[in-house]
Image 1: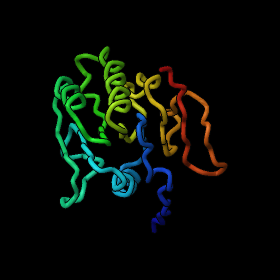
Image 2: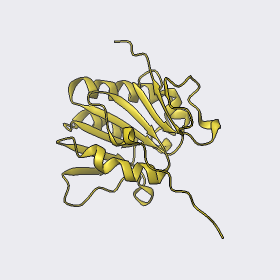
Image 3: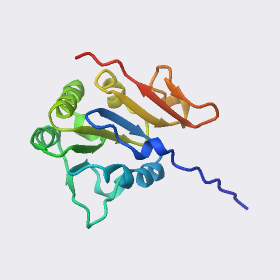
Image 4: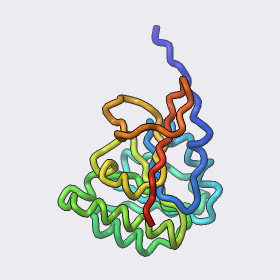
Length: 175
């Protein structure tokens, strides 16, 4: 007989810092549970994703959340530039950068520019990937639910509760 343990989604994952570029790295279930409450505090939300079959977030059809499937790097950049939403959720995909990995830092700069002019940007992922590691200098906060230590961002946690599986990483931002 298999016994499953229910882990409650941390409250801080249910909030998104306004005017910041953050990353949420957590299991699919945590992201799906936390985001509806987190996005409800924003007037306009745009959700960008690559793969429609494995989306991390499925908004309520009655919500005012605009969902956009992006298939290329150019589409992604144009969507970020043209977005007027005060929350931009981006489900990270390596596919956007497979032919141009050197553009990942530019993507980070573009997301930071969105936070200065329009509102928050949150990058969603289920694990720490190469592209996310490359973005570390552009990101204000990484909210990460601990899993395999292989995916550690490579820095010390600044907000860590003893015995808690949740760590939050703050980045020093240069303006």
